[in-house]
Each structure stands twice: as C-alpha cells, then as structure tokens.
Image (cartoon, rainbow, N blue to C red; front, side):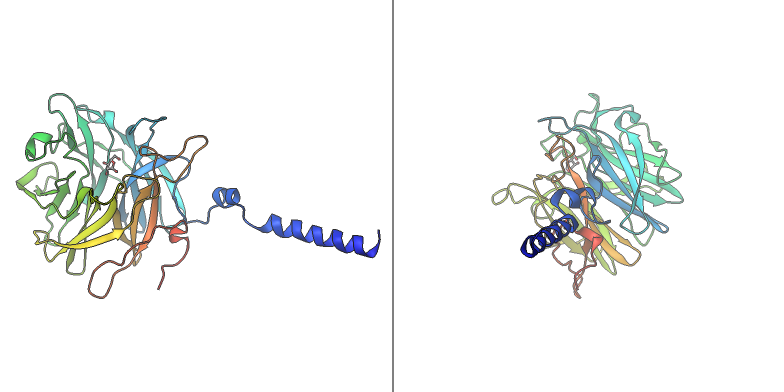
Length: 338
Ligand code: FUB
C-alpha cells in the first residue's frame, strides 16, 4: 500500500466512524431523549389530563385504537406516572367504557381529581339509547391508579340537561377544579362551554348549569388557578380561518368570572384536528400537555383517531398571562427557555 492509499484508507475509516456516531432519524426515534415528544410511543394516546399526587404526576389519557380510516375507536382510559417528567411508569388501563353499564361506547376525554382522600374520575362517554348523545360519567377509586368503579350508576350529565346545543356530542370533556373554599366545580362542553358546582358527594350537580362559552371555544376546557388568577384554557377553532384546533384561553378574578379572552396559547398539533390541553404545576414548574398525530407505530400512521400525547414547559408573564407555547420534539428533555 503506498502512502497516498493508506492516507485515503485512514480518511475513509474516520468518515465511517463519525457517520456511525451521528444520530440518524431512526436512531433518534428509537432512542429518544427522556422527556422528548411524544411521551409514549408504543400506543396511541390522546386527551392528556395531569394530576399531581404527592411527589408524582399521574397522566390520564384516552387509548386511541382507530383502525384504517375509522374516526375514533376509544374503549378505555390509561394512566402513566412520573417523578421527574422524563421517565414514565405505565400503569395500564384504569377503566373501560364498558364499566359504565349505562354507556354504550366512546372513552373520550377525562380528568381525575383528589378530594377527601379519594380519587374522582370524570369522563365523556356515549350514553345508551335511554338518554341519546354524549354524557359525563363519574367513577371513584382509593388510589390514583384505581381500580376505578362507577360512582353513581347513572350519568352525572346528560344531553337533555343542556338543551341549547343542537348536536349530540355537546356534553363532553369534563374538567374539574376545587376552589380555595373547598367547592369543586365542573366545566365541560363542545361548542358551548358550561360550568356547574358539584355537591360535596362529588356525584351530583349542585345548583344551576351556567354557560361561559369563550371566543372560538370548540372543546377540551381545562380549569386551573395560579396566584389570584383563574384560567380557562381550551381547544379553540376559528372556523373562518383555520382547519385544525389550537389552544386559547381566558382568565378571571373568580371561578364565577367574568372571563376575559386572552388569545391563542399554541398553534395546531402536528397532523391533528384536535389538540386538548391539560395543565399542571409539578415540583415548582408548570407544564402544558397536548396531543398531536405525528407518531407512527409499525405501518399505522398518526390520524384523527391515532394521536400521541406531548408535553411542553409553560411559563407566565409578570402580568399573569401565559407565554405562547411552541410545540417541539425536544419537549421537556431540555430546560425551559429563559
Ligand atoms: O378524544 C375524543 C375527543 O376528541 C375528545 O373528547 C376531544 O377533546 C377531542 O380530543
């Protein structure tokens, strides 16, 4: 081997070594940095609802099982938990829609809340033909991972209770929030957004149902409070301008309002019509959970009914408004931007 040939061979070997060390697209996909998006890659998941219990954050999600061009096929809810926002424990299904004997399908968006040492799980389902349309169910458990059982034996909210809506899926996407005086409120809706008080037993509405629909409200409301400010964050759709949902929000000085529209918080989720926000403060930091449809599993691509849950850092301005959130692949694998 002459000098020039051996130099060329060394150069080629170096190139091969460097190439082997660079992350390829499929490498990056199969070895994602902990905390990067989407959070779960072996199942399609949607409608994330965080709940902090002690030093763990539990994330309740719907299990998307749509086949081919099916729109939605959701039969159960799953829960995951984390202590560091980067590594997650899969606790499996916590409930199936079939566990509500009066419901016939659709394990749609849900949220769990802790009250008096028990865990209350509110979920949208399709009611059987005795009360046609979507309804809100309530289940209860002694631990955040269940087992959850139907707490009422009938729907908490049925389509007839909100006569304004002209469509059968108006009563979906419950969000539950306990105010400083101990009163728990439930808000929900599709196109119209409603709010009502819950009785201390957590399985009955207490008093009137009030409509609070903010601008461009589509679905997926989420109530939370920071300092003295109440936030109503939701999936929004300005039908004249956009095809897919974004997240918008309103704020108020009290859970009773008045609510002031604060504009958009995010753009649309990649490849997804829906987006569904969930918000939590955990170990001093705030997080915004969403979903998109950018995950592929085997030969199944993301779709309206095959979504993937994500998380981003959430930050506030000095005046209490939330900083716009950009959806990333890095998610919380990297520190929040300063
Ligand atoms: O996942 C089924 C429905 O799609 C939810 O209830 C809505 O929020 C939307 O994400």
